[in-house]
Each structure stands twice: as structure tokens, then as C-alpha cells.
Image (cartoon, rainbow, N blue to C red):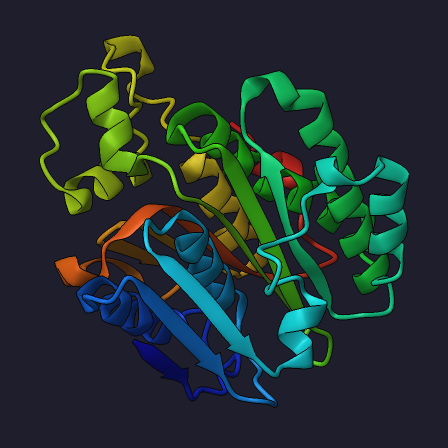
Length: 297
């Protein structure tokens, strides 16, 4: 089946793009063909919350999905080749590639090995990404520390809970508006699967699981671990209260939105179920009063 991706998604809201990507996933899930072709128009512009979930879904899909792509933007961010995998090139070459993006407003789609044995490799990759963001946006020290915490906590959740072979990170900044949209994703067992894996079966659907995770309930199913959770509460508080940002989480068919004016859990149609977990953050990056230490528990 051919699926025409006739979109041009802007950035008015952090959620811009999620409806479109879930629609495409529904079409793919409903298709009976052995192969589907996604046809992208030429001058496409999309948000991280569209492009990264779509790419990670395609990478983990059991059927063959091809891209027919005339977009130079998608080529540049390594969408066509399924992400930039640092372990396939020398690390100095990876660093050089990122340096070439220092005058751009995006980082390429980077995927990293999620197994705990690759901790040092992963830390080096994330440091290179964080250094690139700092150089692109000319970040003040207080924002750099907060950004590293937000990225680190989201990636740690992938390593500890997802059972995913790889994690993914992608960002797009908007210098005239002074904010950064960053998306971190995996195609692992979802939050619900993580609770069940640890023997906690009282959560029976994705909506219950995403509520529990955002209330700070650990997957460990132990009384003394109940308040440790995933580090999500601290990240949300730092982002929303400290930086006036927005937070989005998608796991299975459950969606969570958090800002200063919104705190909402949504159950999506089962046909749009995401196999894995996505965290997206809109991070305003000019804030002289922000102090990381005020939010660390």
C-alpha cells in the first residue's frame, strides 16, 4: 500500500505532529500488504514528535516499509538510513559530524545501544549531543546542567525499564522563539510491560501504567521503592515549574500531557498503539533565574 505523507507540520504546540504520525501508524497496522511505501512530499517540515516516533516505529515494524523521499531535510537528519549509529563509525568521526551541525538548528537522529554493557559508549554519545546543543544555542551554564539532567533521566529510563535494544534522540530548536523541542524514544516493552515484567500486575492497561509512572510508583513492586518511580516527577517539575516548558509521554496507547495549564491523561485508539515509550520536551532555554539544585530530590 502506498501512503502519501502530505503534511507540513509546524511547531505552534509541542504535540503538533503526534496526530499525524498516529494516523500513519493506523494505516500501516490496518494494511494487509506485505510492504507499505511512505511517500513524502518535497519541501516537508516536521516536528521531532512526528519524525522520531515514525522512524522508531518503522525500525521495529515486522513488515517491510520503504520510504519514497524527496525531502532534503529528512535526508540531512538521517531519516532515510534509519538514524545515525555512532558505533558504526569511529567516535572521532561521529564528533566531527556533529560539529558540522554547530550552526544548524537540529541534531541528526542519533540511536545508541541501550544494553547496560555499553554505558561508557552511551555516555560519550550523550555528552557529544549535549555539547552540540550547548554550542548551537549558546546556552548559559544553569540551563546546560538542567538540560543534561532532563536528557539523562529520560535515557536512564530506557536502559532500566524498556528492554529495548536501542534508544533514539532527536531535537529541533527554534532560535527566534527561544525554545528547543527534544524527543527521546525506544521501541521496548512499554511502561505496562515493565510493571508486568517485575511482577506488578495490578495495572491492566497502558493508561493505568502511565498514570502510575507519572505518580512516581516504581516498577519494583516493593514498598520502599514506591516513591522512587522513574525520576519522572523531578524531570517534570524541573521542566514545567523551573523552565516553563511542556512535557509529553506516550506509551502503548496512553498519552500524558503536562504544562503549567494542562495535566491530562488520554487513552488513544488501540489501532494507534505504540510499541515502546516516547518522551518529548519543549525546553525554553533562556532563563537566568533557573537553578537546577532547586528541583533535585
